[in-house]
Image 1 (cartoon, rainbow, N blue to C red):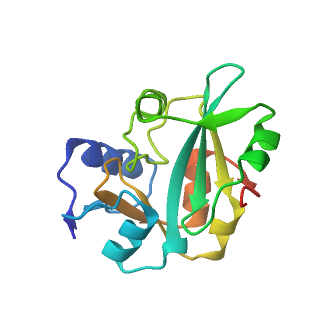
Image 2 (cartoon, rainbow, N blue to C red):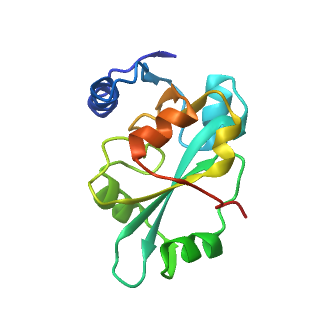
Length: 160
């Protein structure tokens, strides 16, 4: 683990500082793209990873970002009910266009205005979470309260 050097991770660090969150974005030589890879690199439980999953609404093509507990499977049926539209998993090109980040590095800060974000209520059971820091090798720690503050989103039951 080392301090972030990638330009995108440095931008995330700056956004966190602007938001008043004193979190250090760190990078690993190995991938932190999946929850399991991130947990292994960090040395935490998979559940403590705030993983991001992007869906595409079929009615208007807009994106829905779900920030979920690393060990939870997200229920597409529940997400569909919460957003009031049929959804599908987004491909890599859509994820980058909709969030500004590549799959495996989608960060809950620096998102485009108006992006629909849902937060997995199960994340609230931890004192500290780890979120992607803008690249598939960067992460940063934060509390559930900070995650909610950064996204301006409410907690929801999205677990399958």
